[in-house]
Length: 109
Image (tube, rainbow, N blue to C red; front, side):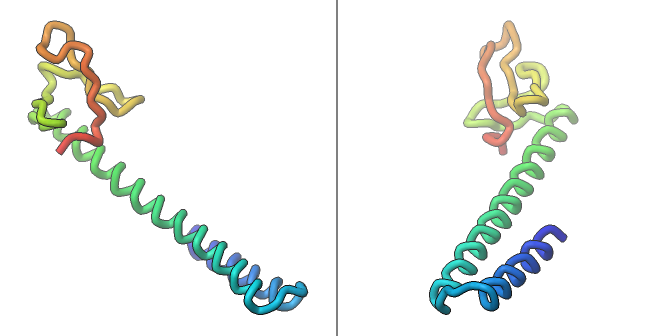
């Protein structure tokens, strides 16, 4: 829905530039192209963020189900690491071989 509004705004920008400015056609096209690139970059950022969020949710679910994860070549499970929701990191438990080691959930597979 938000992207549809962005496209409508882009169309309105084009109409305003076309009818109410003294810019030539090349300048008008440049302004519209810059805004189109901006909207495109925002869309790609959102797609990437959604994919990363989905990946982290799947990793945390596996961790909470007691599975062992591999993160940067290190085995992560509930007995050796705790999970910090706020920072989305695994923290090595005291007394384990990985005491106080921080591993981002995005680095796990």
